[in-house]
Structures are given as structure tokens and as C-alpha cells.
Length: 241
Image 1 (cartoon, helix red, strand yellow):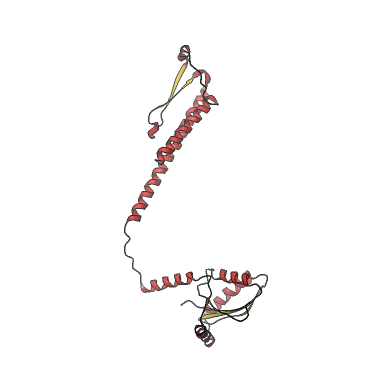
Image 2 (cartoon, one colour):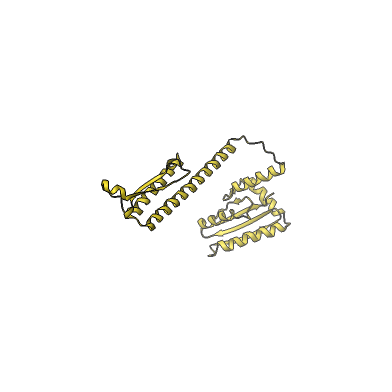
């Protein structure tokens, strides 16, 4: 249906342009006298590969109204439009074949996939961490107590410690050009970082921290310790296992 509709529109376009070129306006409605019939000639152009135009298109004009240049222009116009219609028809057929092929593959039952336990665990970790980007998880008192104890008793550092401290520090310096937020502590051991912040603009600070969790290098969760001061925050950022 779509192909036939486009073909019909293109055929009408050819007819309109031909009429405009021949008369430079809508074709005049003038009766032809018998003696004038002898002074007319027929120009025939064939447009192949189109159902509606498989038959020869015949245009009858008064030979006295056209010169050879105008006739050549008309021939070139019809040839150009025919070429465009053929290309359009080829593109539509190609798209239809592609859609049919994709649909065939979509309807085909999917095979059972297998993965190793290591791949499964890594995939679960990625999805879990990505799911909670932009969140700070507030723990219960006993849970927070265990995390704090673990952090304070673990003093050993690693290459990850320095790397994560640099990531956080560099990000904060760029995101906080007006110094609205003051970092009181940034310390990472080999398994966790602790970040203490005092802020003069709560809304701006929360937006900054949320954006930090969206950075490519940030692959952790965030645990938050609430304080009695609404402008002070303590975060625990564990290393990804």
C-alpha cells in the first residue's frame, strides 16, 4: 500500500511539472479545430518498472508552442523523475526485506544461555551498584556501629586508597568552585573511605554528591551517618568487592 501510494504521488508530480514546463501555467482549456489537428505531434515517453506507469505516457502538445530546447528539457525532467521513483522503490523494497528479516529472527525462540559463577557474580554486582547510584543508604544504629568499627580498626592502605582519595578530591574541587562546602575529612583505608562535609547550601551539596556517584570511576555504594547538625554529613564509601 505504501509503495503504491508513493508511486501515485510521484506520477502526479511528473504530470504537474510537465504541464508547468509546457504552458508555464495550468493547461488552457481551448477547443481544437479540425484544421489544427494536422499541426500537432505526439511525444511519447516510456516509464518502466512502475505498475501505474508501465503503459506509455503520451503527451500531445501544439508543436508551434514548443521549441527544441523546451522539448529536451521536458524529456530530461521525465527521465529524472523516473530515476528518482525507481530509487525510492528500491529503497522501500530493501527496508521491507530488512523488517521481514528482523521479524523472523525476533519470532525465533531464544537458546538457553550459560555463564560462569564468576560472570554471574560480576553481573549482579554491576547491576546492584548501578541501581543505587544517586542514593545514600542510611543504616540502623547497630549496622552503622559495625561499619564505623571496621573503618577505625583498619588502618592499612593500598593503591585503591590513594586512587579513590584523588578521584573524590579532584571532583570536589571542580564541583565546588564557590567553596560552599568544606571537606573536614577524606580518608581511605584499603577497604573503605570516610568523607566528612560541612555545607552552607544543602540542596547544592546533595546535587553535587549525587552527580559524583554518576562518574565512571565511582563504583561504590554510599552509607550515610546522620548528625544533629543538619549542615554536617558523614559518608562511608566501601570498596567494591
